[in-house]
Image (cartoon, rainbow, N blue to C red; front, side, top):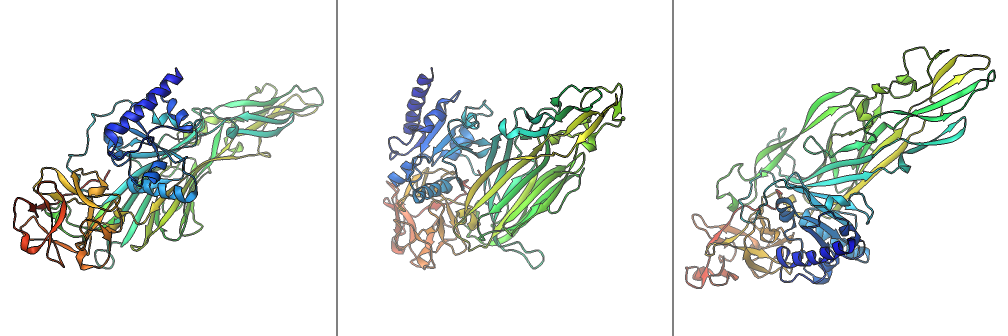
Length: 611
């Protein structure tokens, strides 16, 4: 049965590759699972709409977006899931190139060789998969239907005042039996107990990449900076950190006592209790620093408050601007405030914020209330002739966030200077310190009374963590700060200017989710390509985009009351042939409309940054 399932996957992958996915240049084999991926995909309960991409073919073909150019639309709006495989790429330099391709499409890249990409909160979520035995593999199974499928290809874009790339990172780890086993010294020697049931770390971090432009006067001015916001707020949390569905006690050791010798009779331990939770973020270089955090300071036990994290952006264009606004070049002329809500209920824990450098921050939730066996000891006398032999702690005092579904709230805002280039890795560590509260009973020599004591001499904490890391590319076009626009050929029903992988400029069917058809009309009146960052439309050779510079041939302006885009230096206009839509420059003296060429151009917002 497993063999038949596997064959079905391979056939399905090939069919997908030839239909919904790709261009005519899609290579044979890019959608055929190999190595570990065969086993990963064969374990799916329902593998329909599951797309496999072998990233090595990006490098071999030179067509870097091969197979993933429409991935976000297919994932968010059509229920597809993707498994991207980097395992067959040899050499670190080549793998870095492939991860750069991934960032161009999805905004960030991850370290893992296997990356699952699924829908979450009408966006894409990344989950690392280590190998065929990874417990995260079921996330690739087809989910239950949530909405009617639709495509964004011909759907009007949603105008967001702040261009933004938002992504979710699923930090998930199954806590193994061995990770939750703690060995203690007892009267009968070392004794180990498994303190957890179905323990796991399951947190969803939200990542926002944005740009603020300088706007306003001193005291109220918005920062001129590239912004990355990372955190967990009320809109996304994941299942949390769970050690047990409930708290209980168990025997650790027990022996008979010979009178009158006396001695320790029985020893108990509770199931897992989180003595602390720790969350750390660290940027890999000084290209970026922490601007601020939520919480901003330490929090006391039983802190119960809903806080708001606000950020004021300087933006270009008018909020709610009319239909002509895509023709306006980028200039900061307004401010916009975004808010995120973070609800805190610390209960037994106090939160301590610390930092080792401008790139690092740590939030540690430390148990201060009921933080030891002594603190939860029963109020009744711990001795007596008829005292029952059982656990002597009041486990009901431990709030459930100490063992089940703990969900932290935090946000860290990183900022970089506008001229920052290159990449930065941001690492996030989520950990839990696991312990159990111990008691023992003793009958002293020559006595018949049973005494109970909390055992704090051999207090042990075992730390379990989930580490994740993602890479931010400061050259991503979202950091320019402008809303992306397209250039639509006015004489055609549905054709737009497009920039290919080889930097050539042509026309193609319009798609508001397509990077190749999106440009930023920047402060210098240049049209910067979003699929080829740092490359601009240039009248000196309109057939290819050129490195952005101060050349006047890269500066464009819209003619008042006309749907015409003119080059500021040459006076020629961006045009095309009316039969084929071949992009060309139309000189001043030949701008008159005829049956061969046209300069009629329209522009509208695209949706590449707001998905």
